[in-house]
Length: 326
Ligand code: TXA
Ligand code: MG
Image 1 (tube, helix red, strand yellow):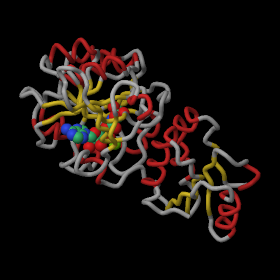
Image 2: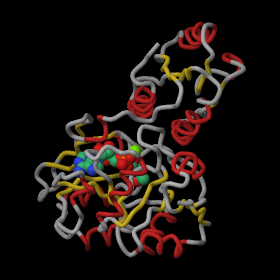
Image 3: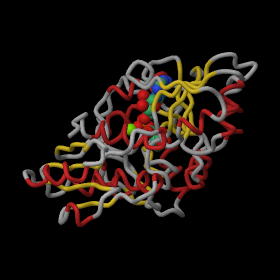
């Protein structure tokens, strides 16, 4: 199969590929997704094949608007609706799976993950398809999620029907996956966070009490290898002597340093700069890991402070490093 590169203006062409059971990569505000008609089990099966994704890892179903989601799944509880209405970006909620969504989408679970992207392009594309789209991140399973169409192309060229050549994604990490529980009628429930992501737990806590329950049992996907570069990677624990420890490490290793706090001259010549603010760092993280893996034996990533604003970043880099901390 030859992968077609679609221009931003070719939404109708992309929608026709989805209608005949094909797979099309498209941007969202978080990362690029690999979309198929969520009501077509055979098309969804292809997603698992091309990504090399374990069959036990359920997908997220994407809707073009809250109105469309609530019309297609009328029995969503009030607590979940409240959270969906308050948070526009980077949010996925777990709800009971309606019968019209095939079991394969949810890896056989009786729940399903649903999300309404805030990205205008994603919304327009899903709307043109006329059906919700099942879409995981558009990377080969285990690799960093794609934040640029070129990342999709490198991973999945000639395995998928098409990819939209749109801009880099705005946020840069995946959505936060939550399940709202409790006294939903009264909307006094609790938000269980199953996967950290683009929406911070501090933001969610403004709506309802939050409990972080990330782990394989609550969120099957978190069990598998994730975000990994092709070379080794280690994380330098954040501390006052972090720069010195990294300098020691790179004396003895052919390393590239991904940094946000120090300066390029501290680690020259093999460096990748993430940015200074949490937003910049998040936006650049996966592209930086993909850039740094070229030509080095090991990537060293500066760690982040152990505070809530850096919680998603810390979780992602430690996973990418397979838990190796120096
Ligand atoms: O930002 C995102 O979420 C991107 C864009 C494309 O929307 N998608 C994404 O999908 O990251 P994926 O497949 O890479 O991750 C989906 C996550 C996995 O951790 C999976 O375990 C969890 O959602 N998930 C899906 N369905 C679930 C369910 N029924 N119960 C619990 N967790 C579920
Ligand atoms: Mg993924």
